Length: 288
Image (cartoon, rainbow, N blue to C red):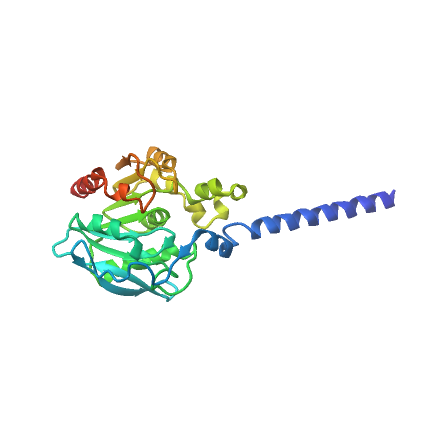
């Protein structure tokens, strides 16, 4: 009898060890803990490369500006100070290349008569460091602080603009700071959801095992927020328009959604060249 009990205890101990080991492996490979793996999958930065010979966009010259991230690394940006501008856009770009590839968006925003700061996260363009999910929101916060403290931009006249992955960063930043409005181009409903669409094994991890709880824009914009403008192409393959539809449906007022028929993801000329895009921007700024 004692022998039987001993074997049962031994087997239970072995099973418990296996379960504990499996739980440790599960947690250790979660996006929250194994961020180095996620960072390499998500971010595709380019250093100083691409159309860096450009010195002006839409007839407006930019200033090279530098400011410190929370961790002390130096971030680089282009600042377009427009005389007598009522609003200033803080631009948060996507997870690939660098700021120099966003000229179409910059030209579109400059046509509204607004000033612009677009910057590179750590590891992109001329910014120091390596891109990390854990740091991108802090990088955005540093850019916001630079505008407010160094350039004396009134938060009541500051508009957060995010595109693609940058819409996730914009959502998180909008929870931390005051702003006049938020513009999301090709928005993500949640980063976790898009990751699961691209790689099904990610679905085993709930929101709390992701940085910033999966960058859940739906959850953020359900709550009270500044006026929100969303623009999305109906043929977007990078972030399907279902993300925009679901985000808009769940978001609280005030909100506006502009669907660009036949347009794709960020970088598609049909998106930024669409007349309804520029019209929506102009109307949005007038109504702020």
